[in-house]
Image 1 (cartoon, rainbow over the protein chains, first blue to last red):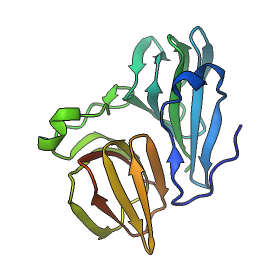
Image 2 (image 1 turned 45 degrees about the vertical axis):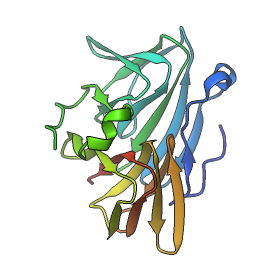
Image 3 (image 1 turned 135 degrees about the vertical axis):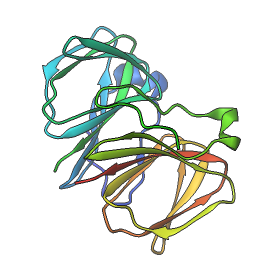
Image 4 (image 1 turned 180 degrees about the vertical axis):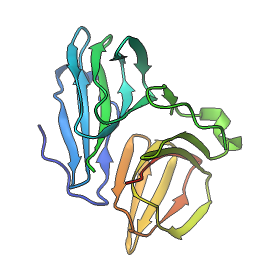
Length: 108
Length: 108
């Protein structure tokens, strides 16, 4: 994981990684007492099993495609699409193409 | 303002508006008891005077460029760059190019 940027007010780079995505690692981009911002790398074929986050989250697809699974419902995310998931709602992620997701966790 | 999408779990479209940006209006994309997600349209030359938000916010530039001003510090945002602003921190926005910003307000 990269060191989180200093906060508040620092500019955080969440641009698509493009060709660098294939060898990129998930990284914490910023973290304070109230928020954590992560770039989650999900390569094609990767499955993140069902889990729950430690707060409300938004999941914003920056590049590539994933399937986002909540219970019986699967939603396809591609670049520019996002979801809100309330705290405690269990979810899983399946990589369709190599993808990166901006995950913002609200730590109340 | 467009009607907010039903939540949670609905897919929210935050893709760049492209040519449609010039005539687009700021819109609430989603709203719950704990979060509000807005697409803020800031056209070139527009100045949003100093104000404060009703919670912690992230400001994610989706397209175009703005200058984001906090006190004596000005930061240039372009597509893919974002900032975190704690509740109570006064800030202003100046449109450099026609731009849209994804603003996520955490209502604790």
